[in-house]
Length: 170
Ligand SMILES: Cc1cc2nc3c(=O)[nH]c(=O)nc-3n(C[C@H](O)[C@H](O)[C@H](O)COP(=O)(O)O)c2cc1C
Picture 1 (cartoon, rainbow, N blue to C red):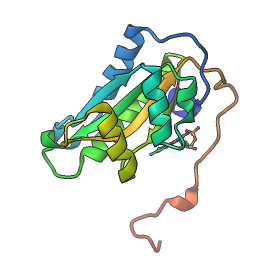
Picture 2 (cartoon, protein in one colour):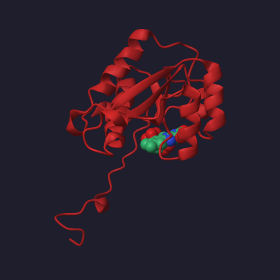
Picture 3 (tube, helix red, strand yellow):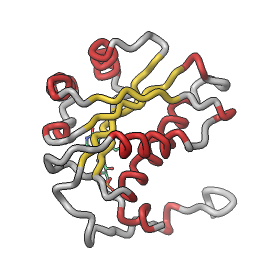
């Protein structure tokens, strides 16, 4: 619960690089996620090339955290691996959330940058990363050492009015 409660989107990072071990730990956490039919439809493109970051920022207007991020992990769905059509989005979203929580536990910062279902972003990123046609980018996680802290960032988002018992009307 601690990681869940203190996790926040971190959009500014220091120059300190991530280690290969840290990246592997993030990817291991991502791949522990649940998936429909245990199909594990995720694929990950790990990008460190800053020229590629610039190209992504041209494609995606809200990808500015890549200005200082060390690594971008592009989380894609492999639709050929699906057991139940259409569930790849939920599989890969669960993987991203796991990755974000692992980043907190490693004292790293991360932010989810949405790609799918904005088709222009999907098409441009697929071309840039030379993704095969069955591989669809869902989102990018920008990661690095945080230049802004998690301290005192807990915000209570519990809304009892979002809860419905038995039926909507009750
Ligand atoms: C599907 C999705 C897409 C997002 N896309 C972006 C994005 O493109 N750029 C960005 O800076 N943040 C993006 N975010 C992060 C949200 O802005 C952030 O989670 C939200 O404002 C709540 O803040 P918190 O993460 O600090 O709790 C995205 C989050 C989700 C779940």
